Length: 350
Ligand code: FAD
Ligand code: NAP
Image (cartoon, rainbow, N blue to C red; front, side, top):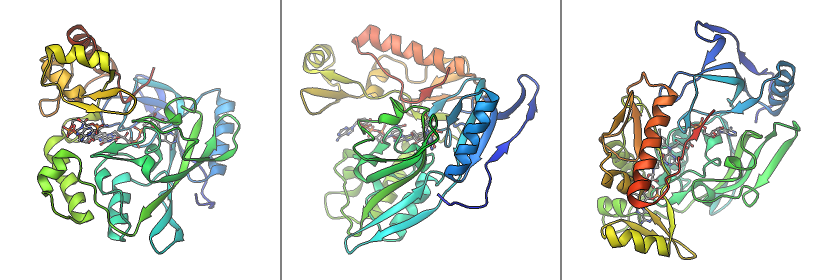
């Protein structure tokens, strides 16, 4: 992060009639959310000033990025911390690879585009994922057969309890499928300020993911062609949050045992199944929701997208409770029919 003359930019006191002095927090579900403060930080010292302020104000600090993987409440009794450092620095330039340090405030898709333009390959399957770089380690973002954990060497940040700067190795981050230590033990405890990633200077396009293979054919393709295909498929298949406010996939794909799978397959022979290690199987949450007859199902101002059964959309006037009620209905219906418990992917705040 830049150690500049910047000071944390604290967004003070917009007077919202319902909540008194507060700041409105943007999120892609377009839920109304007012926080006590929004504090934009540029450097670790800024974070330490914010910690001192929070202690004084007796409020917790909550890290947030672009608000694309959260279900926010009407009021957050907290100071929301947002990293504004969007720098990209080359730490090592080798014959075959490059090591980059990227500020947590950088737009993720912007990073994917720029690295490709510079001849640094690897991130192309992860194009068009909304949000900021600082959130990428949190749920180990993944799509089309690739995930963030394949590229990261270190995650830098500040421990919000001790105010100490820390660097975590990739192992320390405990990355798993759509999760990490930042969604578990270090949730709300560690503000990610930058990540170090290694990218290749040789393109090794990965089109194993069926929908990519169908679009691009079996022959050799460029990384740019993969990027273009991912962008095109996503634009066709996913509801645009600007038109249909949403947080992407609302549920994780459930992981089941061999025994559970057999029971499921006895009644649902066409269930899509992806074998994992150690006798576990990933099944498609979208398929379960669709088969339970819930595509398009609505609850107050929230609905299951007509376009994609895993995405819950709002009409722009929904409250958090509308989304939670709908999600609960889906979980219950899927459990009643298949005895499989769905788990929400976005963070649902109290
Ligand atoms: P936010 O939603 O603001 O925050 C998410 C979580 O990360 C919060 O718990 C927050 O506390 C934490 N966090 C954010 N920044 C920091 C920080 N600097 N330090 C510490 N903690 C932090 N996800 C995928 O994995 N794959 C996809 O293909 C995908 N597609 C999507 C498509 C759409 C249309 C949408 C709306 C979402 C999609 N998502 C996908 C989910 C989402 O885009 C990602 O999880 C993204 O990384 C969230 O980034 P954000 O900046 O918006 O984070
Ligand atoms: P899809 O191609 O319709 O596939 C449906 C599901 O099947 C996906 O969730 C995917 O799991 C799984 N799958 C398909 N082929 C697979 C394979 N060869 N090996 C293992 N798993 C396979 O998916 P989609 O909904 O259009 O999404 C496309 C990609 O973008 C997926 O990777 C998805 O995770 C990602 N995406 C994520 C979000 C989010 O918010 N998290 C939102 C939109 C899209 P995986 O999800 O594990 O890949």
